[in-house]
Image 1 (cartoon, rainbow, N blue to C red):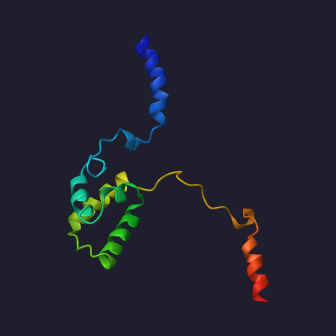
Image 2 (image 1 turned 180 degrees about the vertical axis):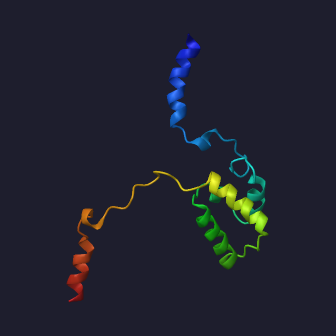
Image 3 (image 1 turned 90 degrees about the horizontal axis):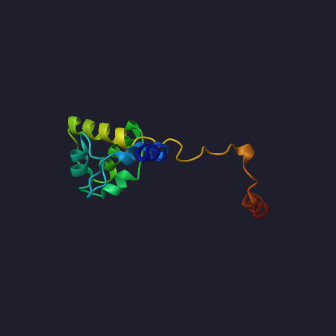
Amino acid sequence: MLARRMRRLLLPLALTLPLGAWAETDPDSGLVIDDGWETVKSTCTACHSGALVTQNAGSRNRWEYLIRWMQETQGLWPLPPEMENTILDYLAKHYGPKEGARRPPLPPSMMPENPYKAAKEDTAG
């Protein structure tokens, strides 16, 4: 009887937690432990903390863009294609786009009038 009552109380709570909350994470980097995590940890944390990875999110294309940006501007070395695919697969799976994290931007018709725009026009004339 008590077990059934506990299940009824805990199940709705469990359903409200994000899926990643159930995943085991590496205590050093914070990365979700799954296929490819060791490659991501050894590659990405060579230059920055795992928190920089885990606090971000994006599609596979976005993560690839970030890798290219790091290679072009931050000194990231060329990655063998198989290693890069492992990293991109892992990041897209565990740190993909966040659903509902932010509301969409308001359309211009719903925005209030910009008080600074009027002041700028007054000083321009």
